[in-house]
Length: 277
Image (tube, rainbow, N blue to C red; front, side, top):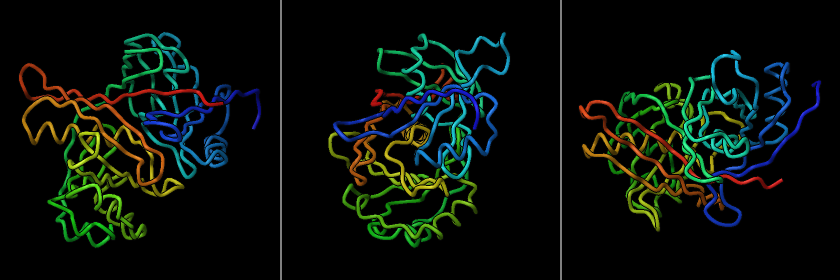
């Protein structure tokens, strides 16, 4: 690796001490190869955000962001976008360039950012028995059909009866990844509406990321709030608790708004971020 770099270690969506999703934010990695970027993320052991110059000087975006987990690049990452936006101090309504698309960022406070996500796409459903077979533990409490939903990257949403069942999950990861491959989803988002001090509690198992579980996952929370809005036929404001089973409690704010015609959903996810080193 060449060039002078700076790294800010941040945490996004923390719900108390020791909580949140860690995210190293790296500056000065221009000219690094994809393998060098991936290797840096593997060294950190976390999803890592690289802040780079915009692809076009005239694009008007605040920054270009790339996201790598230890094993590969990610097209979109909300918690890293929140962390980078807070760190950069981008203005309210600024646009950032991501591998997936250009996204608008809103800034309700100095330590907060809200990322607007993409169109809602609903994929195939999976019956409870098939999902329970690979989730283990509390998966016997799967309460209905699991469904693939995307507002950035597709996630398999799995409803559970309560938070005890959620905490008890013990996936067979090889079988879980095979199911995700078959459905073309990038992870499993198990959730319950019977949550303590939140509207939803959830756990996210990302496919072959280099770690088995996420403390906070914005694209999955966005998929879930979009699904709830479609199911309920109304705008949604949802507080999603995640990371509790990992000992890293997190809280994400997810919203879904129908347009005037009631046909299109506008989804956003946000929360707080702080620099820790």
